[in-house]
Length: 390
Ligand code: GDP
Image (cartoon, rainbow, N blue to C red; front, top):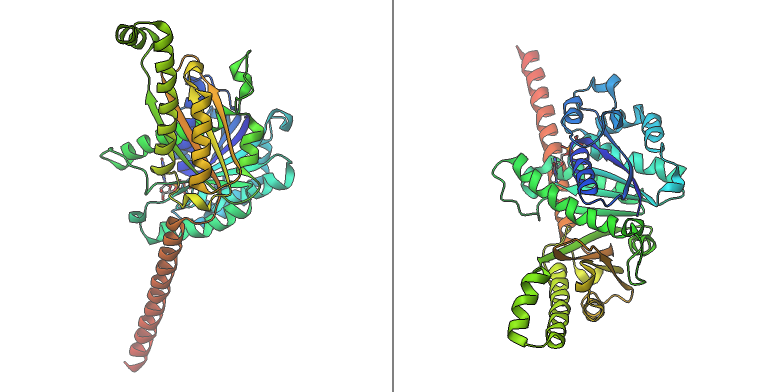
């Protein structure tokens, strides 16, 4: 499907950068137009794939290009200051050329946390196309202030988007030693999952001979729905090339018919086991699988590996596991690919313990902040009274 994307704040800009790289290297063409919006000039300058003319410095009158210092209220102010300019820049693409908008932001900081819901709200007011959000939830060890910012932003972002796709930094595994190495790896994971989702619906890129079973953008839009939260599971496996696997199999099996049957069985089993791994493994937002109200399965890879039987069996298994009556399924043929990848999209999720945990941390952090304020007020009072006594 074709998207107009707004990356807001540092995380939003970096993730947009990775999606642009994914789009270009895989010739996926799901990004029609994209802009990066930030109140911090150095963060905008650090991007690699967003063209200079699509980088928008906002809130200069408020923070002079220095960022918000993790304060969403300042972020909100910066975005409001230049909202018209942002909307004009993102609306440069004719809306007939896109299927949806996507607003990306880290929810724990300032510019993205405070600004992304406002941008989503305004786009929703102006355009008929759906507006999706991609929100990054801070890891629990980032501290109370990040949880508090994210909990507040999350509510507004959900309210102002047709679906909020979430990625939990706390659930992502990274072997990076420094924070920025870690983020580079995590952002790669984010681009793989969300890039596959949005490019799967971009059937034009596939050219002629599109099979009926290919997933299209309306199935993605219908699955994401018009409100709520979405989480995604992913798993992939490298496949042997024709020469290597054909040579070996035919030596063992003799006839080419038998080897064909064996390889069909192999691709069926590969798909069913990948779908189990994607569903039961780490989701972008950990959640109860049976709390989703709409599910979409996408299987991508070389056309000969996309076993119809495997996809049908996997879909039945998903229906049972998620207890969901609307499980859509389709394939995404990629002739030059050397792996099979599956994506399980869980939408309308209502039970996500990580969100409850974050809200709890936010309340605790609020209480601590209030207690500190009371303490400092009473210290100040003591000081005044002490001064009067003297
Ligand atoms: P902003 O520029 O004020 O919007 O703040 P940030 O975008 O830096 O938001 C801070 C939050 O985003 C942190 O709590 C991190 O969880 C997250 N974050 C920052 N940079 C990255 C990144 O490159 N990748 C990911 N996945 N998360 C990030």
